[in-house]
Length: 256
Image (cartoon, rainbow, N blue to C red; front, side, top):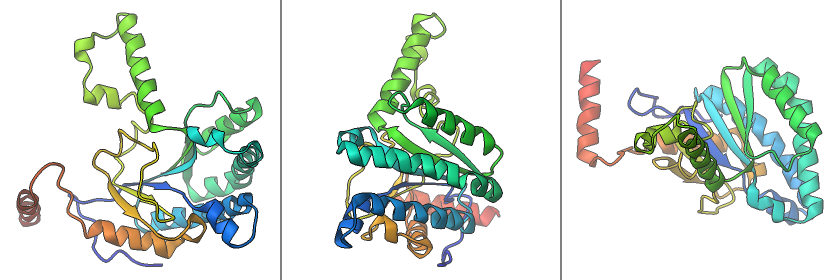
């Protein structure tokens, strides 16, 4: 596994990584396989990336597994993906507990079966004590997330619990999915595509992006290490100039 060349520093940590797992169908097609076989191969990469997160001291990993737009895919594929999702939860539960992984699922669940919803609740409860946070975004969309937050705040205003003038960015963010996790520092997308596809729209405001050319089933620990190394070569400015950030980093180093 590739080691991080630049060490983590207090002003430049990597605490939360999000991944758009793209290219499963194309990976399968190039090998003369059914698309679902690509998704099955992609599941194996989740273990590799979780191991890499521990290696690089990443606290939280969020994976875009199924978007709200994905319901438009052929019914056979959607059914296969839901079945694969349930199988993953059942099969990996003991392993997640043993690895100290806390799993959570974000997204709307109104189109899931009652059995799948019950299974998700069980896995979330049984893994709640884990110290590595794994979040699966399933039936998720960034616009949906923002709309749900707006709806929740509007209901509080309607009930007299909140005044419109009190609504600000900080309060709004607390109503979003992932509000209890560190900000997303790095978002990785595989398969060479350069778009966000309605993923974590609010949360990605200052996220660093890394685009890998390989398909998700080929994205192993070494590929994750390369993304981490790239992240540590960048200067995160958050609206400041490069000179301002350099001075801040110099001051922090001199005070240590």
